[in-house]
Length: 475
Image (tube, rainbow, N blue to C red; front, side):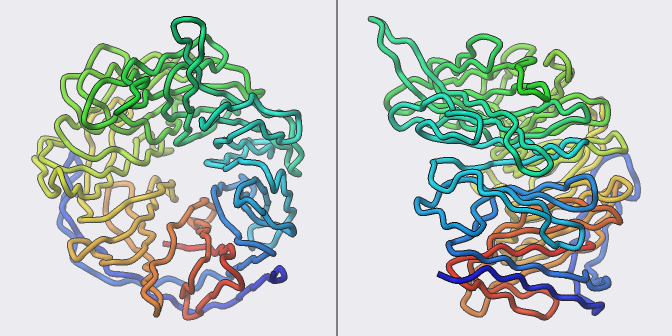
């Protein structure tokens, strides 16, 4: 057992940035297409770093900006331990990282947050998965029998009080009156300016989000090699079903996956992931498997357009609707594909490479930039339509090597800067970052601190099995 600690570092020093690759892009913008040399940059110190440790292994599961300069977090933390390694805690922090409040919603039930959003008036939306029938403060969720997994939605007040919660489970009627229970697994969530909550993921069997049953496809019921179907669902700010659609599973060597969701500048829904041959995104079966981005009407869920990367391995793993009206994306793509009239073949089907790029709001290609052999993660908008992304370099084909990084690209795809976090002296790679954008072109990075991490010349070491670590970056 160890006591809660807060470490706050103030400074105005300089931090060195990593070398950025100047890989050629493709698309309509000449500036984005120009090769860029490797270079190093510097920025001013970030000003504060906050480490929080409690009586058990602290874990950060979700992070979001609160619209007021601060940020909110979800995970496992607080004054009481989580004996089963599951549960839910929420916290709100001010712009300088100082805590405003922390609430442990449950420390014993089988709940895990996946994503968190803050509504314009400060209410907090959380989506995640659960087992059994946990109570998040407004009564038990729908029970999940056997070894299945349910999806929960919950809304909390600006001070962390539970306002409502809903649970959804997958079930399928069997001949003779029996039931087969599957899982509903969220993969991403976002909210629009009206507080509508948009969730995507995959499921097995049949689920009803409030608009009638959605079927994941016969392939999701196989006892041997079942494949999940995908879903996209829109709820009101009060948690009432508005519309939903399913992407039925098909017998395939590669699953169809719905991995990411965002709202664009016009309030419509952008969904990304991977499709199997024959998947119907809304206008009939696709002819080839591959990564995809699709745009759906925010009010009705009707398909507006789709952008496929046919024949590729990998998937689109992050989307962001930019204020410039572009659609920013991160993807892992293997095998040849054409973008903006230019052929790309940097990755192979067995070893996809990372790409970041932009589409116009009409779905046409703008630019794409290969990043080498990297595993990409989060994507948020910076000032002026820039994008800030996280990832892990895998080998020497990227500018970052075998490190964690946070990198910034301009609205036209020009590489600008990056922060690199190398392995510790023990050879342990820092955990993946979560990002929350702030004003002034700054993002807050958060992580589960399970091993020593160096930031701006200081090494931060967990006081127990793991702590939380937050700090701003100005990439």
